[in-house]
Image (cartoon, rainbow, N blue to C red; front, top):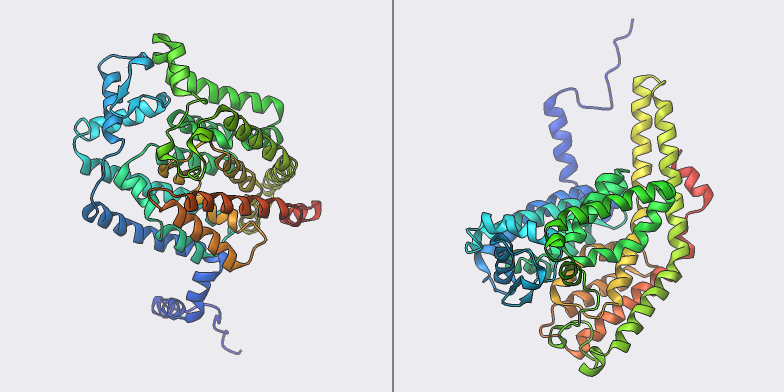
Amino acid sequence: MPPPRRNQHAPATPTGRLRTAFSMVTSPQFWKSVILDPERISIMACILLVIEVVLNIFVIERVRYTEIDWKAYMQEVEGVLNGTYDYSELKGDTGPLVYPAGFVYVYMIFYYATQQGRNIKIAQYIFYLLYIILLMLVFRIYIKTKKIPPFVLFLSIITSYRVHSIFVLRMFNDPIAMIFLYAAINCFMDGRWTLGSIAYSFAVSIKMNILLFAPALLILYLTSLGKKGTVIQLSICAALQLLLGLPFLIANPVAYLVGAFNVGRVFMYKWTVNWRFLPEEIFVNRGFHLFLLGLHMLLLALFLPEWITYFKSFARLRQVKDDLFSKQKEKPTKKKSNDQKQMKVNMDVTSRLLLLPLFTANLIGITCARSLHYQFYVWYYHTLPYLVWSCPFTIPMRLSLLGVLELCWNTYPSTDMSSAGIHVCHIFLLLGLFCNRFQSRPTETEVGRAAM
């Protein structure tokens, strides 16, 4: 009898496996794939997390903190802690309190954690941890969608001084709202609708810019959950807003609604980043504001049919996945495990059908905003690589768009050129997304193939 054949597929000993792993990670081909292959983006994400852990400590310890709104935030929160629930009486050095109740509760925690807001260093390290949490949520989105090359993620995360500053040197509330927004998107991708709605509504309660995602989210609810399910999720969102705002609504409902959800507030011209090239009299003109609102509605209407197609395809795939998983229970364990793994990969990629409409709706809102301030960059910064790679542009043009936007947002004070540059980039992005919709539309055949 001949001797049994040895297994040729794997090393027989731990030493052999270690040698194989070392050979792989020292291979130029491996690192090329880590840089270029979207399938390897999880490796790049881990590398970036390690770098950011170290980099942000360096920023906190070496770069001077600049006071902008932190003191005012603490003054507003202190007013609530002193028993004032009338929004018309809550104010800080920079003006009245203009954020919803969720903001108050979050910064109330910071107030106690930082010795009544006096220990800035502790506050910076709290925001440092929050920044790492945001990156983990964003990285999970990019890992699941496998949309962009890893090197783009590396460039976008490492090179933005402005975003690092918004977190650990300025401690604005904008990034806190975005953390809950990305948490909500992760929940929606996983089909956890109620948890996602709670996270989304809480994000809105911190800052209203999160409502820019609402038009696309409403279509997502309708196509995935139907009318009844949509009413349930909207009720959850509304109930949370009511619960959070209850003490202020009892004290003075009009002051709370007008102060926290004032969509007609006129911004100061000296702080605008996106309309510097306009004369101030046009910037504050109500007719100009109405024009921007009309443009916003028009752009949403132009993209709406495509969003419906994307969301319907996403909903159908989720249903196919659920049906197939219910049948897996009757199969042998080993075969079931392999089938589930393959199906998970396919469903992860179809998360793109959910993301693009949400990110595009936000971009449209930002493009038509009456004013953008420097901290507003974080509203869409982490979605830009995804949006740019969803356009039919060459790689040099895609990188140029990201680079020009970064340059414009880092120009202080803003100039006619930097403001115009932001709009030019936004227009290119919207044109690219609009023109590419026919090429990237998921067909019935593709939808069926993805579920196989």
